[in-house]
Image 1 (cartoon, rainbow, N blue to C red):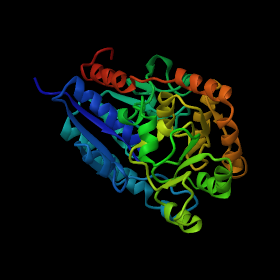
Image 2: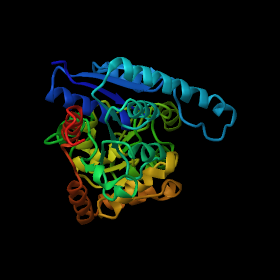
Image 3: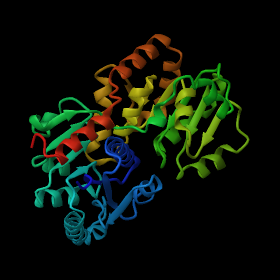
Image 4: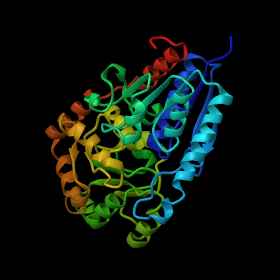
Length: 370
């Protein structure tokens, strides 16, 4: 009997790639010999991250609409048609038993090709607000795995399974690591600490907020772990100087995210679906500043799903530079509110998402329930 063959398509950001890899790892645990092929978008980070963990990936020449530039979009229809043709050939050649779409530019053409070839496909919708591509593809999907409630406004209710978003297990394993985290960052484990993270690329608003109110952390004797992202690090360090106060740690990237989470008392973050899934498992008080630069403002909707359960505080991007640091310091000193938020965000955690999704993928491969 030949091994199960699975295509996993999508990417573009860590929020799509890391869940995709977690699903692949879960599939390999269930059937070590299964054959997995990733399909991504050329020039995007999946083309580097996926091979780095041992999986084969093929790239499509696909990208999204470039906002504010008609000229840059002129070639888009040709890229879409070319990607569809390549996706159809990939599906014909690889002969998958099932296809998984995790979102991102490459997901659409591959799921469309699967539908055309009558191969069952599963959509892993990470956000609380489904994008237009997934809404359309959801009509013919065999199963749609979601992370938030009330997703039947976008998809047929009978196809929905609430699984949560898969996370990197090593990132959320913070048990008993507080002192180790403080030691790694050369901080005092007995001082109150705030972690600010805008993801690997960084978040301009979060960086401006920290820079404007930098002195307040020093004045209040609060420690700050500030991850700027690679686009902002050099500029921040030039303006603030390299001889920083011992309470302050400014880093371009956090390679040991688990230790940073463990060292923190309050976390400030964007509201990407993957990050929220991690924060629910971390179980610490969180302030979310949704990015305004994402399709259909889905980060605000992700954040609101937590706010309505009293599981996080949300601050709008446009007001963050003025109020974010003050709110964070206020929360840090309000033990009762911090404990309440930590308990409520923990109740929203779905820790077995990767295994639940992998199980559904294998059922579809065996044509169970179709």
